[in-house]
Amino acid sequence: MIPLPSRVYLALGSTDMRKAINGLSVLVEQALALDPFSGDLFVFCNRRRNIIKILYWDENGFCLWHKRLEKHRFKWPRRPEEVLAIDARQLSWLLAGLDLSSAHQRLYYRHAG
Image (spheres, rainbow, N blue to C red):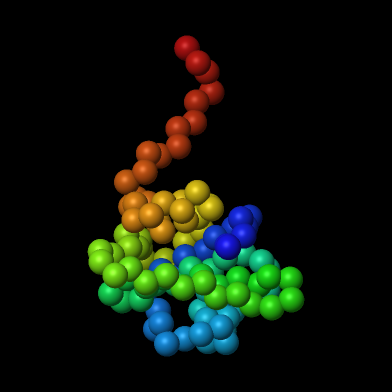
């Protein structure tokens, strides 16, 4: 089971899914400039958008979670940034096939009337 982290990072673009724990942890450090030992989740997707891997540090070792869709594609965000921070709720939407960009935006008000 994947833990509920404080932060989830999507590595935008496509990732070579031949990479395993060592290759993905180096990618987190060098390409994303983040700490793979932080306990945060780092999410990667392949070019065909049918495979997602999630890397995280679990107190005494790395864990790598892998999901392959037999049909359909993940709604992977297309943005110019290399990394996108999301929350655990948005990760569950992504894994369920929902599009993160079509969610309602949060509204901020100062007065009710």
